[in-house]
Length: 461
Image 1 (spheres, one colour):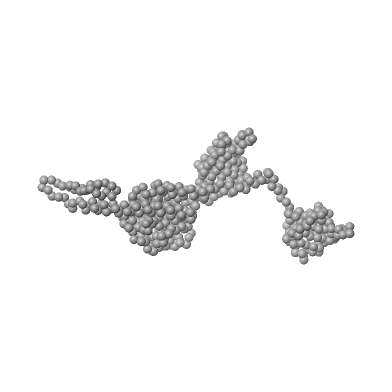
Image 2: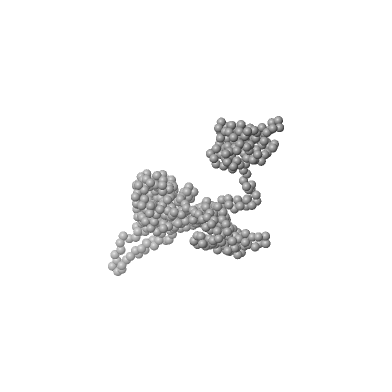
């Protein structure tokens, strides 16, 4: 049976308290029945004024009478204070206020230290003198997929296998022995991640006041954005030194594939207009299907992209990224689920089958054009499941790279043409046949004076 005893006898009284209308406030008369009900009380308890005024104040609490209870029955985590009301020296009722229960710890030094360990955006772990894990924060458990219970008391290599993990474990042991911090960078896919990321790791000793090492801490943060930017710049730097070393069209195309596979892409195809490989100036590409000859191909995984081979021709339908970028003169970036890729695959079953076989998930198609002349196109594919899809930054880097390659290819095309002209001139200067002589057999050859054009000098017999 519910008690109608005024709750002022059960809760601590706050004489002289200044009231705020925002606080959950209710007033009961001398009989313990509610007479006034604030908006704050309605928000806290869930009762509208018309359904609670006149009811016993005890209806707001559990059967025991000490815990406030919501309208739907669940207990409320609040502090309740009662202030007695008097009139002419007699008790006239009670005022009840409900205040939020303060957290048990308001942020003392120990809590702040624990929060600093658990809540940072980077992974943090501590290893004892035996290089076994003592503790790990929430970020590390999330990215690795292992709980604290699964890793506590174990070596890294007892949890995960791999050369990079062995190297990290050795570094932790060395820091524990020498007391000197170490820094390491890894590009790897952690067990709790779907793709590989760049990780920067600081391994540092934890020492007492005398300098003795008691443990080692490892902090690791994902610096994939900085890693990718650095890799792109390194790619451009390597391209400047390795691409265009020979005045050979196919050789220059092959150098492009060697620089970009596998650091940047898993498959790179360089397809040129047939006239370019002969050294001639090609006619402008028109919208629609286009016939190109494979100049070079690079694959990270042999057999993942089989044909056409270098020297072979292939027809690209108008819906293909190659044909579109040749017609528009603009590079294209697509993911495998894009409608444009679906249309291409529907029109080109051969390339669709190869894309499915190698697991392609993104591509970049770039027109190869130099001095206002379109020479062909380059196709970059990413297939490996651990590699991130191409981004807009990758597209920009690819365009810069192909701009340089296009100039080198055009220089090689020009050289091929000039060399062809020189060879034709050499042949024209030679006699059409042996000169008959009754006393001797004759032969003729052309001796160039030297130089890249291989022209100049005189014929001799």
